[in-house]
Image 1 (cartoon, rainbow, N blue to C red):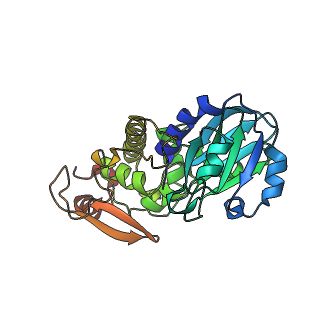
Image 2 (cartoon, one colour; image 1 turned 90 degrees about the vertical axis):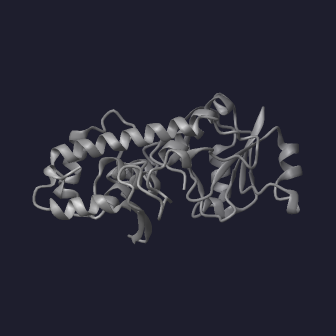
Amino acid sequence: MPELPEVEAVARALRPLVRGQRIRCLHVFHPIAFKPQPAAVIARMVEGRRVQDVFRRGKYLFLRLDRGLVEMHFRFDGQLIWFSGAKDLLNKANAGDDGVHVDAAFEFGRGVLSFADQRHFGRVHAWESAEACQPLRKLGVDAFDPCFTAKLLHERTSRSTRPLKEFLLDQKRVAGIGNIYSSEALWHARLNPWQPADSLGRRDSARLHKAIVHVLRRALECCQDPPPNFRDPKWWFQGLETILRAYQREGLPCRRCQRPIQRVEQGGRSTYFCGHARNNFIRGMFQPDRWEL
């Protein structure tokens, strides 16, 4: 699933392509992409509108229009594809085995931006204003926002009894962190995924904050080298596996202690961790700021 770094890289690559362009029409191939909003309603809201900017909040991508807002969420496999024009789109979109899967497409004067998700989990919605946009109202502080500080993180963890991994996945607390980078941040911070969030001391909160920011910024650098190539229907981010220290490394040696990385189900998702962090938590249960590192 694209998380903050991937969506931020998409936003930065897409901005020069569509900023200032007017949406001529909306092509709808699979209305499920707009669910629960009717495709006809979205078409009326976006056709004729000009894109003023592209921005990201959490794991959401937004097109700010001269009136209204387009919201996109990629879920697991959603992506954007760029066609040279309407003719190119209609020749290739969903055209048999050799075609390109497309759910919806925004036609501009100088190209077509399409949204594609073969599993149909991703969504495209339109809103009258930023104030009316439900995701923007519900999301917590963005992990790249200057307001996201170690002090703020400690304040929020101190009010939650949830395990740290589940706390980091809660988009109402901190927006943008998903399954990949929560496991990575906890590994870097040497914290146990099951540790109650409210048991973190200030030093541990500062360490976790530093790990979150480091992991996300390092991943963003990777996602931009090379940047997303929307003109290639098969494009995807390259090289992320080289920076991962825990995620999807089950059975491989930990880069710190050489013990095997472990994987368990936690909250319905896979959690990857070094067992040494778990042992540290058990040994230092009543003195979390004095764990052996």
